[in-house]
Length: 214
Image 1: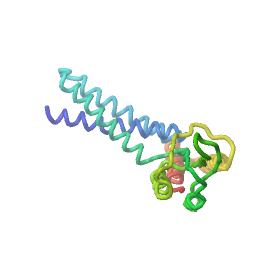
Image 2: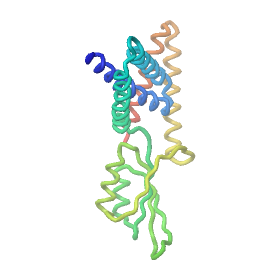
Image 3: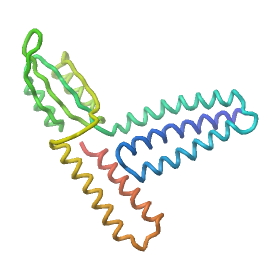
Image 4: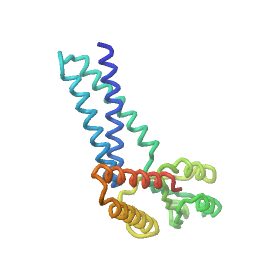
């Protein structure tokens, strides 16, 4: 009895993080990894559901299934935060033009644009900063060191158009297509399985580049 309940929880702890990883890969347009995690997710889901719905269909097992799912959600959120794939746009409002902080941010690798505007009581300066999510804490530390009273607003941008970042992302997509085309041309004699493995390796390499890039 206890062995089955523990197994149900473990299955859910595997299933929900797989769901998270599949969603992340889908957002990053990594097709083969999305399909791979989707397959594993469906397999684990059916396995867990079969355990609960087979036999006596115990209420206890159903409750444990739900508890395992909730714990899996915690694990999935933790994994997503650790991966931190994507960008964050941060607006920082300060009372004066802190050129020293701007220089520090740019030296660290953050893109910074400074605007001057009129506030309720005085002139204000706003900085628009684009950063990778995994660098967000480092960004906030620099801001807090220079401007502990700064007003900060952050959000995840959904669309990119124009500018250096868009050119960089387009170049990366073209490189991925070229690598895929070269591998496809050189694998006429390979099986479908080998081609699939090659494409998964290519997407894993692309994911590693995204992670390692400052």
